[in-house]
Length: 215
Image 1: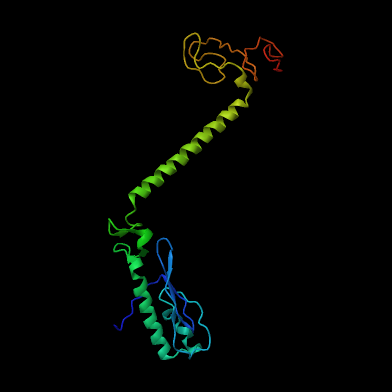
Image 2: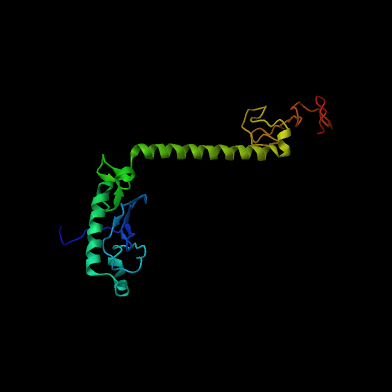
């Protein structure tokens, strides 16, 4: 075994005075893998170590606490050996992206076809499906907005009249509720209709002649 110990920032040290255990996490999705518990044969530590997790590792990030804990040189060596063993155990589940240097899980965040993590080389099939779903949601909201506008229009009194789209005299396009044609000046005759059944109402009628609804 070499003198240098490789380590990553994405792990937590769960070791106690009873043994050693570690958790490693994917930089992209946060999925975690916990190593199998490795019992310790050394009983010189009186208190249970706190769960540790730091950018540089559980032991390396707690140098200031060493004087307050009864850690023997033998325990430290056993801890290092356990850490190396834990990395070897979970190494097949993780891979480092050569582009962004992130450690990602092979199962969900690695694009094997591109040789990069999915942050650097997204899965096009997944992205296309997501884009289609997003477009569908946008269309649903757009349709809902139009429907709401239609409901607001129906609340207006003007819908009772037979609003024309074009002038009956010159066929020029008309704006809503136009009383005169903007092109020829012709008066736009509108026909009042019943709000209940849609029947044409006679001029000055107070009730619909078809269904009796009050105008």
